[in-house]
Image (cartoon, rainbow, N blue to C red; front, top):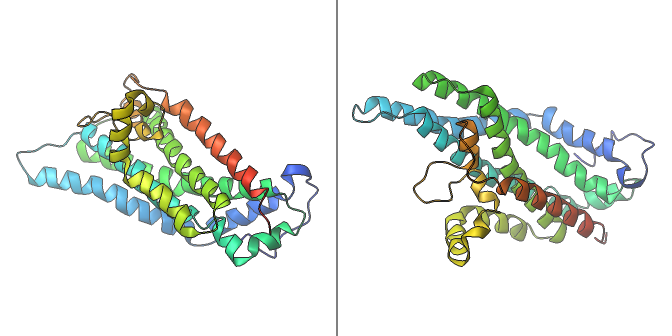
Length: 273
């Protein structure tokens, strides 16, 4: 879609050259196709189905009684990890695919800056993910939990928790985007993020052995409890309106996202086409 023939001449210059047109193309690929509702149905179906299943099992088993706290723990953990894998898979072709097809070279032959190319990929997909992966599944989860167990959840706190989950997904999105600027192979671009996500228990255990302090600056704690057997992550604590015993992963994740984007822009600026 970035090679769309509907591009129009603009007066932007410098690093912003062509940004509006590139963003328009990215938005069209999300909102003028079936992509947005397909993505929404996938994540609603997977994430929220788990919550419905847990409530159903609880009601069918008279010896167990699942609480809103349990459901929110499942939602913040599963809703933070599963979309990270999906978004990494989706983003692995954002740059590599266009480099391999020659679309990137064609676009950059126009009055378009390489910074705009990277930012359009990030911003266009970040908005699509915010709506289809976080907001819509989050609304459904809110209704399932409040109606299913009859518990009232503070809306501002729930939105704050969704924001923490989104920050976690943005980190993995930025990492995949940066790898796409460095590598021309889809295998490397998708393999590294998936390995880091799926191997989070091993990685957390390794860093905990080296120095537990390292874990306090990694994005894992945004959606995962650092202590094995514990329920709460940062997203969980925010939704439950509980005091944050750990807050450092929030600014450190934001800083790492900025660094990853800067590295992507720097490396792509030196790409030869």
